[in-house]
Length: 143
Image (cartoon, rainbow, N blue to C red; front, side, top):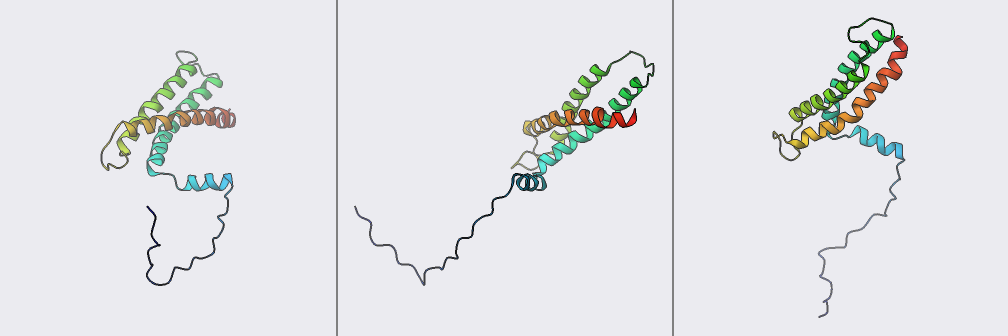
C-alpha cells in the first residue's frame, strides 16, 4: 500500500520565522527561578515546619545559654533529650499543621496522607538547619 500525494493545504503555507537559539541558563539562574516559583503546597509545608522549629529553637537556645552561663537548673544537663524532643515535636506538629493547611493536589478541600508526608519530609532538614543556626550562629553572639 502506497501513500497518496500529500493533502492539499488551504491558502499559502505559513511562513516560519527563523529559529532562535534558547539561551542556556546557569545553575544559579535555574535555582533562583525554582525558588521564586515554588509550588504553594511546598511553601505552606516549609512555613508550617519553620514556624514550629523557630519557636522550639528559641526555647532550646534559652536553655543552652542558661546552662552555659552556669545556671543551676533542676535536672542537670538535658540538652540531648531536648534535641530529641525538639526534632520529634517539629516532625509531628509540622506534619499535623501541614495536613490541616495543604489540600491534596487535584482534590481541593480534601486532605490525605500526602499532605502529612509533605510536612514530615520538609520538617527533617528544617529542624536540623534551625538547630545549627541556633547553636552555631546565634549562641556565640549571646554568650
